[in-house]
Length: 407
Image (cartoon, rainbow, N blue to C red; front, side):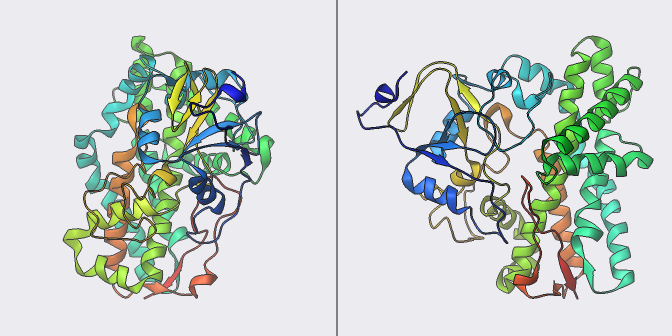
């Protein structure tokens, strides 16, 4: 399809905008994304790596449509060099991220048991104990303390490792791999080495648990492979993103605590009304800029009319959940943090078939972290000026590198 025929209204298609990888301080909203949102509900972008351009949907209803419509598929992306954020692109068979139906449901079923509401209820006491042990050390050693180093990093890594079934003596190595994979600082070679290390280890672990009866994810995957429900490559592709998911909790919760620590009124609200923390955390999940740029693309499997344009079969499409969470049609005064916002249909964990598998685990950890930090450190405050907090650089998941506090 030519550009002249790619619109429904006869106007020229939107220009292709370069979207570089920005290192942004604090919780500043990406200015490139903000400009794209003003330009139109459907724009076109070119990212630092890959080839060509892609459509970008930013309006809430369009994001929901694209992510829940079988006319847009993920699997086709694996055979293309779509414009993208990541320097390295080596999708693996079995990854839920790239699966379309019916394979998606077949694969997800293999690990679903580890992330049910019941599983989270069973996990909660153990997760609280892990967190209490970390906080005991913080309180014992006294101020100052870096919450990232002492709590926000070790807690999710430990909890995810227990859910996955990573032996205690191998967790540091697994964490080193996952951290490098989500970083862009080492380029394609460093990311590739980390992926080879992690996925090689996962392969060995799944094989070793073929006869396992445990409830951890690697045992569930080993058993599923042994039954013939999924292939070994698929099991490895399933496990990788789940293992990496602990990194997101560290940095998302880091942003949330940073906002509470830098806005005394917000902290007082959270501290004084513990029974109403849930909606406040939903609002913070909506508001924080979870990531840099966009995540994974989809391919239009047929011509689709959207936002006044015709997306041609074969063209790549991205959605921005960050933009959808700031859509004024759904969230009045979207730039304002409004603890009373209700209802709260944010899409911070995704939407549709690719809704985050580990969302119940992530939410459990965020709830526990906020509750425990606020209760155990009642006078907690930043140990440096707000502008003195250092932020992560060259990474796809945003968050504070350190969060120094006193109490």
